[in-house]
Image: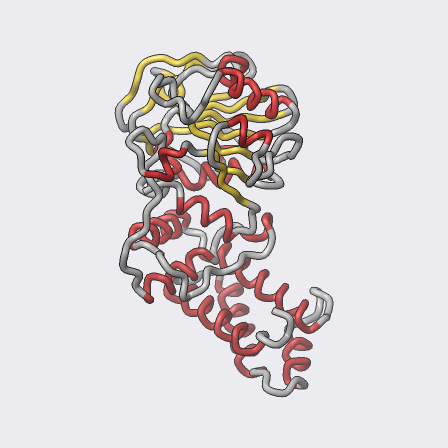
Length: 352
């Protein structure tokens, strides 16, 4: 449970990420052990509630107003909330009745490209304010709303479950979340969650982040491949999770597998993976990215101990797939494995 899947997905995409503890005030201004984000552009993913028991999330209205001021100065905010706050007040958003677990169809927007529906657990309907747009909802009201606040932009979601490990792969939730990142294009993404989340307290806005006690090597290998797949080009070269990574839970791996199957974007994934492989290869050889594959194989043959035949096989496999325009899931996994093995065995002493 928790937000681990999305957090690690962003890390593997090359997005600068961080988690903040404590109040919004200390998060913005900083503490002795943590630099504040005041004056820095970026995206805050935050959680709030109208419950009076949840003072650990938002210590005071003044701190909430400070967050709104940060957004007005150019920050971006993905805000999971079921109640009024200075942010929603300033956007003219009003909250109505509660809804049970539900699927909502989406409206056409830059945020909802390739998103047909989102899957939520319980939340609250919102009445959008002037100048805001509904991203998802039904005849009773909105579940996801987007708008501007000063120089900044905000997406408000009244059901925090869509970002949690247990639900992120449902519907098109992960595609919506990735689209938000793509549209905002933040310099960094900061997760602000209450201390109760980290400690497993019952008042947490999202479930506690946990990992299974048993890590299966095959699952870790699958996680490596899955984490290598997503939208790398816009965020920079993807960096794979090491095969020996500890604490990869079965729930997390299954979530990532479902995300991948849901996306049905194997050809796009291959383009992004091969782009990262090619970039690392050309940098290691100190040659321009526009060099031909044939010339790269020739250069590889000139280096002692390099598997030029293996590299040529990879190039030929990629070429065949690109020409046919079809790639099975097994074929993708095999090719990614071959590229990763070749990289580790041949570029380990070449600046990789």
